[in-house]
Length: 303
Image (cartoon, rainbow, N blue to C red; front, top):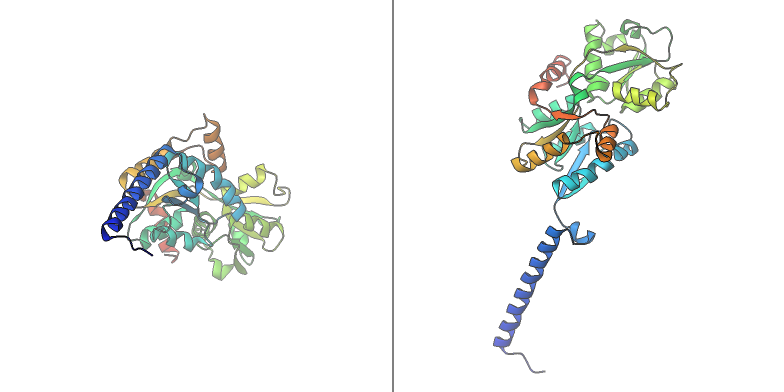
């Protein structure tokens, strides 16, 4: 077989190089115009979102779906919801920049902020989170106050939950009770909806949880309020927020913040997202909002 001359090889190589460069230019143009197929888009940068697993995985996925679609349109990049196994995993994911945006409770935000040396920042929070509350529930008619929890089996949510553990515990301590000393058993259900289920099934005599999850269950008639009742509602405190890493470029952080702050009930999409997030609207957040939670965590030796 006749071998090609070195000169011919050089020309062929240059043609392939030019062809590749032209193809790359076309691909970039198509991406900008939104014309590339899904397979090509899958190779583009992905903006990852996670959330503390304070409700069942199916509920978290249901809440995330329309928000993910909205953020894709607002940010102009592919957005994916990345579930995590527990609260600690959510903290580590954002601290180590495995995700770009995380839904934290006040306590998990404080943990992430401290763990990162101040690099995790709250971006926005629901208006409701400026005056959040926890409720204590029971199916035992004899339990009417926090004092009546003495000698009982009581369930919190996750150990790292603000509204399902830290703040309820702080109000129990203020009432002069120590859970480990005064309760017959301290249980951790792992999530707010699981706490309701444990109380309703009689596995524990009382439980503490997030007020918005309780109100959702009542509205959707998922709990028999003739049997299971609220016997104590805590004072207000700051809670949940959407947090980012300080290394996120300022322009992207601004675009993301604007996306949340622009959500309104005046549009069908905005109303759906806000309803699923159980929010009236989103407002800017700041680190100082969570100083009280940090103090409560240190006081309870949880930080």
